[in-house]
Amino acid sequence: MVVTGLRYLVHILHSLAAPNLSDVDGRLEWRDRVGVVKPFSVVVVWNCVRPRSDVVNWCDVVWDSLKELAGLSNVADSITVIERNFRLFKSQKRTPLQVIDCIKSSVRLKLLSCTFKKSNDALVFLRLWDLPDSIFH
Image (cartoon, rainbow, N blue to C red; front, side, top):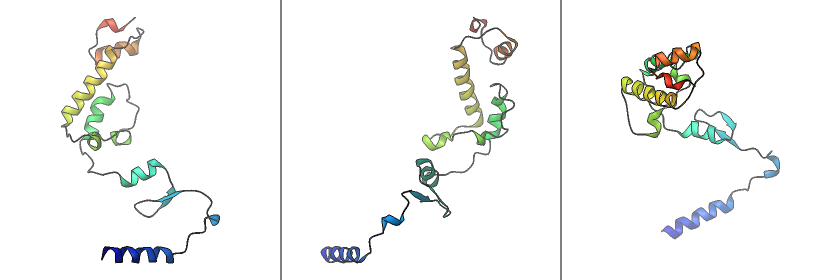
């Protein structure tokens, strides 16, 4: 029965007309989830096939808590504009306070590895991040 099915498929394939590639301008295109045709790229395909999950309702709370400390008070009010979703790549969920603590620890550690010229801005960061005077050169 498998052989019969295979013969049937081969018969169908032989009866199909081959596409005329001389009429094609050589561009690859991708039809997205809603049927819009776009130029083919890895980014376009990934945005179409990637897993999606619910929006985290507290991400703006985290962003607002950290934006000022990072000296980014003039940046967009919503972290969703620049956030990469940690949950896509790891099977972990964190509370807003855990995310804030993790980001603060990472930023503070990076700041401790730097040296700064003594300036008004640097003094503000020293106070905000509770950094030692040894960061100045």
